[in-house]
Image: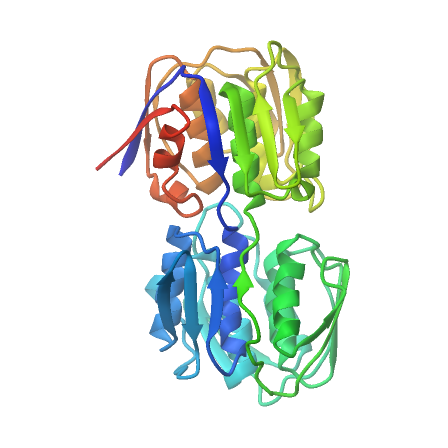
Length: 420
């Protein structure tokens, strides 16, 4: 599957933001902590959601699509604790399942998680946390097994703030005995959204959204669903649309978003001279006559999101002056640079974490391959900016996080088609 894009067209119209990938996946996993069915609303229908559904279905968890972006997930007939290798290896977030499985049935077995080539940090943060809570961890060929007769609360300090680590250990601790404290926890908005839902079902979590989270476990008692989990707006998708509007927008209005989740990006766009109007749940964006170069440095929330680093770099190829992009979160996230240079971008790779961009540089259409989810979307923006036709291969990576992005971009005036 590939995208064929003919660039140079200005974009205008309304871009609705769907539910957050990193929120819906954790909501689906949280179903293992409940005695009965839970309801998840505002769910995006993306490839990562399909992969998580397959993993849960293999554990005899029943998932029903109730229409209107609503899922009903029932784990009352949960069976087994082994994550199917060929499914788990396709999804980085598969490791999150191991925490609730360990808490509920006392064991879990899983392969090395897959997904993007980006973000493959060591999984020590999970293993060390489970060990601290009394679990035995065994590494075997191709994966790991964890087991505990009785999980106990622990004081866990993250060496590096980890979103999935924070969410996974928070869910593990919900059914444990005693109090767990997570220190240097991640603060992304998806975490308090998950904690609020768990608390509504009977969990006792304090401090979610801050660096210190306290969880008093239920001692094995499952939670009871009391309200639907509404998936929060995808701040990365919203940011991608904002960058697209700053690149090509005559007047693009991004709706169904939370501007408070985008403060670092909004500040950087304003510094670049982009015309923005911000409402309570919408942002209008236009490309300025002169786009100014600005430097960014990625940082954990509420800093500049690493997932928007590559799209912002594409925007800076069109800015006047020199900008520096400094990636501090992930290794290997500058792998897209060579392809942008082939399209005409003037970029110098200083080291694996820093690039210098000089602009404005006219981009030319080329055939390129999406290496990961966020760089893939950056290539879409670059192709829409470029003169001539571009072909982007391996669009599965883009479909992992952006639902039917080609159809949605066509509604804004983009010349993009999906080809088998």
